Amino acid sequence: MSNSPTTPPPPPPPPTGTPCQQQSKTPLTERNVVDVINNNGNRIGKPHHNVILSSGECAWATQYPEIQKACFLNRVCQYAPPRELRVQNVEPILQNGPTCGLTALSMIFDGAPSAKALLEQAIARGYSNNGEMFSARQLNELFEVVLEENRHLVEYKPVTHTLISGWMDDPNIQIKLRLGAMFLVPYDPDKNHTPCLNRGHRAHWALVVGYLIDQFEDFYVFARHGKTKNLALWSLRDLAKSNANLVEFCQPVGHPNETFILPEGGMGGCNGLLCKFIMIENYKAKNEIVL
Image 1 (cartoon, rainbow, N blue to C red):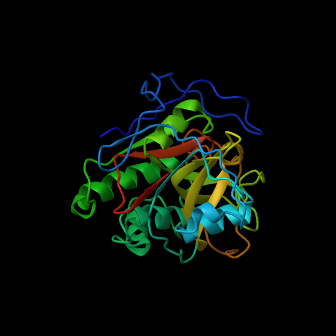
Image 2 (tube, rainbow, N blue to C red):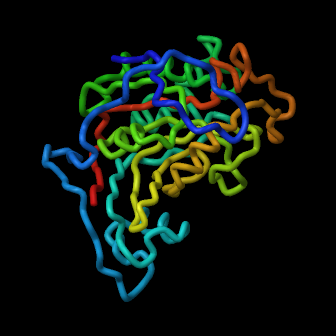
C-alpha cells in the first residue's frame, strides 16, 4: 500500500499561495487513456455521441436521476449525452459539526466506521479537536489505520491510497479518474458548496466519485460531501484552482469559541491542505455507472 506523497508534472501557477516543493516522482501511469475497464473486466472504448436530443433537458440521463439532476442544475450536457461518464455509486452521509473530512472518509466504508468513531480516533492521535482535518497527510494516515482495521468492510481488495501534492487538473489525474480512481479533496466552498477562491476561509472536504467529459471535451467531476445528499458536479479546473488557494485558516462563524488544531506550518504549509489530495485506487462500489 502506498502512502508516500506523489507529485504530478509541474503545475501551472495556482491562483494564490505556493505549494511545498517536493521531489519529482514518475508519472502516475502510462496506460492508454482509451483503455477504460469496467467492473466486469470489459474494455470500454471511447464513445462518440453525435445525436442531439430533441425533447427535454438532460433526457439522456433519465435512468439516472441523481446524474440528471446534477447535470441539469449545472447546465452540463443539456441536449447531448457526454462523451464519457463514470460514477461510483457511493451513498451520501450528512456531517454533524465540522467533520467534513471524517464524513467523506466514512462514506468510503459505507458509514461504518462512522464519522463520530473516526473523530474519536482523530482526537486520540492529536489530529483534531472538533472534527476538523486541516492536514491532508494526517487524514491519509487515519485512512491507513481505518483501512487496516476494517478491510472486511471493503468488498473489493486491495484498496490503496496515496497522498498527492500538486495541481489537480493534470492529464495524469484525468487518466486515473477515467480508470476508476476516487479522490478525497479539500477545497474552498462557496455558499452553495461549489468550489470558489476565498483563501481557504471555509475549507471543506469532498469525495470525488467520478467524472464526465462533455461534447466540448470539458472535464468535470462528480463529488459527495457532508453538506448535502445531492450529487455534486464541478469543473475539474475549478476544483483544482480552489484546492490551490487553501492558504489560511479563518475561525468558523458557527464555532466562535472552539479551538481548532492546525498542522505545523498552517493550512498552507507542507503538512496542510494547499495543493494536496488523496488518491484512492482499486475501490469498487457495489454499483458503478459507466456510459
